[in-house]
Length: 365
Length: 152
Image 1 (cartoon, each protein chain N blue to C red):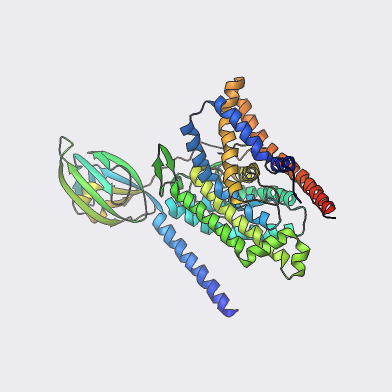
Image 2 (cartoon, helix red, strand yellow; image 1 turned 60 degrees about the vertical axis):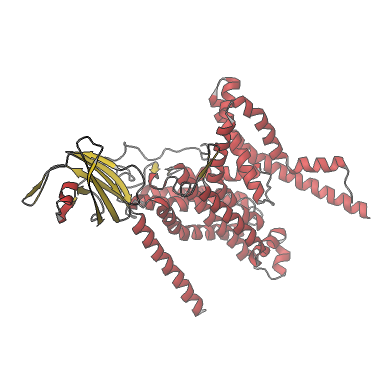
């Protein structure tokens, strides 16, 4: 069935409503913020290097039909535990970063497996379940880091431990591994620093996702994502496939958080992971992804658009209303709002697509 | 099945070995380069007027230390090559240069006495107690609404 031009435009607008809204907001806010082009480009390059890995880790569960993995914060927590250890042992540079990854991998695998098993028991409600699971594990994390470290798990570095003798301080200084990956190999283009090593890692990850989606397991995930019952009847181990997708996502989120924090150079011990999940998911949705479909270009477009808004909105707010704080509120509003908009649009889009499908069937008859 | 276990065990062993390598090569040490008068046993070594020290493979500016002074450097790994340049009174001309391969002896508080090193004393790398002040007192984290922070 052929669609009219009006229908095609309407379909495009519905499909890309969120990125379009963000492009329009950016077009409005960039001149108001009075930032130079060079500054904005440098900021976007830095943020692409910092955040892309975390956002990419969300793609595999979407492929497996498990929606947006709010449980990625579990991986982020595992990564932070690895970072606490290497900070205590004073292992620096790229070696420290790799060691943190190795230490946190078994923990991330365990947490991912646990998350996968729970999500299998909550089929159809994966997103809300993983969201609440993140809160639950945050409590466990706080218990371990606040009471276990220094008590049960030995921590020697006095700069890390609270003065009472156990528990980790609010802020962990990651000066030893700060920019270790970014500065491993970087170059300047017209005054803009490109952290080439980080982009190479991100590029390798993109290749891995592309390769993985063509493997037997990747195809199984796609099949499970499309229809679990049909996949089950064709002999695909549905539950196992779903667990594997969550384990891979959690481990990659763990590495993503380590890459993110090596760029920042300090870790907010009790809060960094909470922010990771929310902002990674919001970025992906801003890039035009949906709960059921996400691609690599969605990741990069989303990170650029979302962070562009975050950079320009406080200054735009300051020059427009004379109050930078309003821009700050706008940041928080945007991150939660975009998730809400994306979920509503997803539901609406599905309804519309069903309607289109029904109409096309009628047309064929 | 048994073969798979062997492969898994080998992978785990390789990862453990790699972790040990990463730990050894990435461990950070704070070195205190000392250019003061020092007495080791019965022998006294006078400070040098002005020296420049650098470690092979360690990026960053070399340290220039006046007589009676100390300076610090943080390095990765235990094995290093230390280059000492003795500078003239005008502080521009290098009058003597020497290179020394060494292995850092202690996990913390490594004091490297340059006068003792140049005089060939084996005890030039000594351990001192560092009184590192912990960061300003902070309390257990306050309860916060999740996700209200800004993305960095």
